[in-house]
Length: 189
Image (cartoon, rainbow, N blue to C red):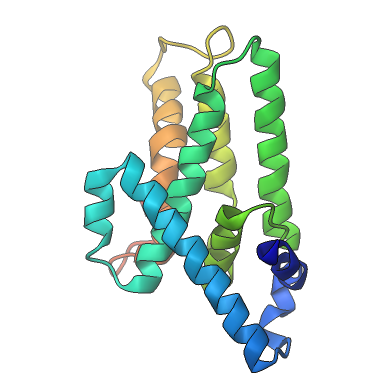
């Protein structure tokens, strides 16, 4: 697979910019990324038509970054929503998903084209934190029947749930969109 051979170069994305590639290799990398982002856009369009239309107003780099984030969130949600015999299977899948996320952040490891897109976002937006991604996984756990809750006793508990399943998306998007003057991530959170 072409993207797997590319991932060996990207595994050390901290030094990615320092690596020298031939023009042919650079063209190949660019073609793979283009195709991967087209696929991310197709997934976004298929699952979130109105959101996708809104992304068409963004500059290309921002649009692609938002698609990559959307696809990661969609895939996370699908792990929880997939039919399973037991919650243990879902918990195992979420654990594997979280380890995959951590390996992407720490080592630049990619397992498919959608990981490749997210890695490209990390390279272009190095201030993108892993925290909201991990927090979203924790939020998904709060929805699981017999593990999570469907009622909250306090606003604080409800607020935590809302932050994890929705607020995290805003924090994931923050490095791409930026903040208005005099605002920062702390105020956004």
